Image (cartoon, rainbow, N blue to C red; front, side, top):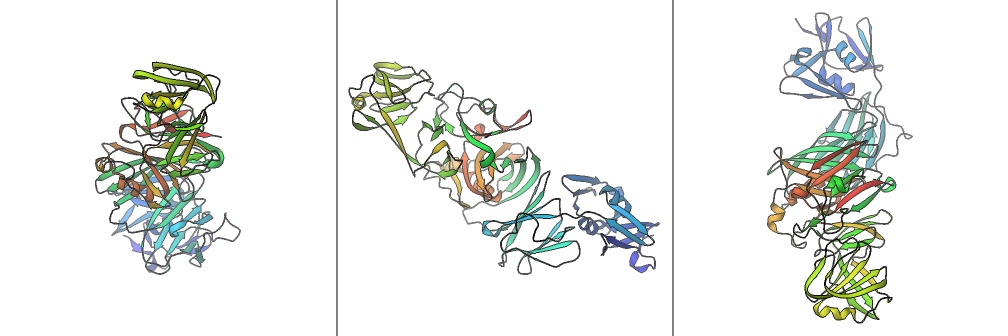
Amino acid sequence: MLCAANTSAQAPKLFLNGYTLRVPILIQESKTLVSLHEIARRLGMDLIRDDDGSVLLRWGLGRRLSLKSEELHARGPTLYIELERLAQIADIRLFKLGSEYHLWSAPARLRAVRTLSHNSVIFTFDARVPFELQTKAQPVTIRFFHVHSPSPSQGEGWGEGVRFSPDEPGVLRAHLPINATTSWQATVIESEREFSLWLRPIVAPMPSESRALLRTETQTRINEDILYLHARAVTLAGPVSLRYLKISHWKERYRLVTLLPPDGIGSLAPLDQLASQALAAINANFFDPQSQLPIGLLIKDGLLQSAPHGRRGTLAITLFGDLDFVAPKLTLSAYILGQRVAIDGVNRPPHTNGLFLYTNRYALPIRRDLPIKAVRLRGNLVLSVSENSIVLPDGETTLLVATGAARSRLGGVRPGERIEISQRLEPALPFVREAVSAGPLLLRDGQIVLDIKAESFSDEFARALAARSVFALTESDELLLVTVVKDSTSVGVDLQTLASLMKALGARDALALDGGSSSALLFRQGAQRTLIGSRRPIAAALALIPR
């Protein structure tokens, strides 16, 4: 027979770290049972109830345990557990003095509070903390359980506008810097070293935006800077699976570089072959499946390898590691015998009446039915001039090749003379070292900027439910390498939903890369390499390598 403890003269009293715990207690056959939900959060434990009656407990950093239904005692909607059993699970010291139970457990410590744009706030602790968000009162407040009260000397600083006020012992109350009534989204980020909670208001989507509910499923620490996450989204079209890397301290510790197939421009290679030495990599540019040539702006080691395709979205990386998300226009020309002449294309099969530049990475024979004029360069120095119907790249020199009437642009140039080739990007990208392009641009400065017409994509391409790849930068300057899977568990996404999902992941700027069967993400953990997506050969990739 169970009886409520508060009706008994010998009702036990509970103390945690010296202060009284007021949680529902039951006595059954001399066993002390406590309300699992109430005492768990007071001890810093989260619980998740399953349909089969079991309960998953989470606490500390990565610690978890599933409780079977036979270990629990249900009274209506409330679950009870034996106090001694819970103390044993959580390694909590428990002493009994008469009818008093004294529990000793180290509370979590608040390490930092950071306020980002759009009133979002990140709280970082040294261990998991249960929380309770209260949005009815103004301002919005959040209560954290089993936490040391903060002191001014703690952490790396407090977020602007966040205010703390007294609460019960062991409970930390924070007032958030917003007064407007709104909905809030909470994202938990857990690693081997810390536990963070990211709170941000959910702005009502514009009519053109797609709605999606996003939830993080698992996360794995690759190293101290890289986290691998699996998230699931519920969209109007169906379930969507996202696999992505979140990379911090990238600018100080890593370099982003363009990868090309070892056989050169005009050949393809799978991502795991391209990125055999990289710490992480993702597929990049579109390519022509017939010629195998990349499509869109491509710069490797400061050298132009492919010209922009219209005004499609581009990621440019400077010598200093700065990132620009742009849609550039290229003007390419050569200074020959005192005259500036236009160059019509880079690393492309020559068409009639045009002048074309071929870099030392171009790997395909250059042919026309009628004779073509070719100037071979090493640096700016002319090595040879020839007129044939076929020219073979040698992997070491640069070629200027003219067809038809455009042969006059090369004039009477001779070996030993100098030709200067210049490129101008608009907008200007000083010190650009690497660049990849696919598109469309999804986000700029936290706003959706998707414009498929401006970037010359079809409505059919934009609406297709497909696997997708994305490169993004967050509000807190973390990199996101994202792949959206399309398989039996994931329907894929259209571009509008993709942009919304990137916002939900916290991206500030985001660029879609080639998708479909080209979509792939690779990362290394020690000697083990993991490839998500396809092994379809591709024309270019973007990789992260240590400095």
